[in-house]
Image 1 (cartoon, rainbow, N blue to C red):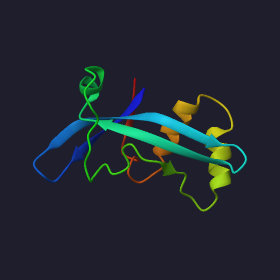
Image 2: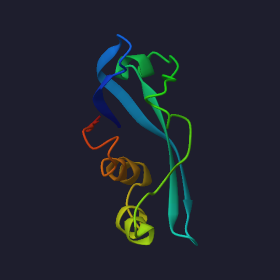
Image 3: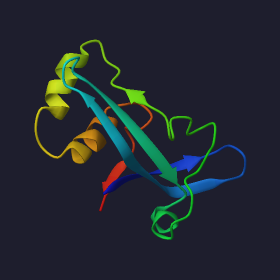
Length: 107
């Protein structure tokens, strides 16, 4: 599974279906935090072909840690990471962030 969205890179490149995948999740159960790494590809076919993810300023979070950003991180941690499939939970959590709120979950 992954996320998809339209991205205009403001340099002449537009993708109607950028493919965003959770590549790594680190959970700290003691501090109730989760760090989510994502990679963004031009589209799903690019990922399936084994090509490299995009490296752009717009997608500055690619290959970096994205902490849970809220006023009550322990509440979000409990809501999204206390049970269930961790990868699906991470994708669902990402949809709550401004950068990902217009994404669609795809198989």
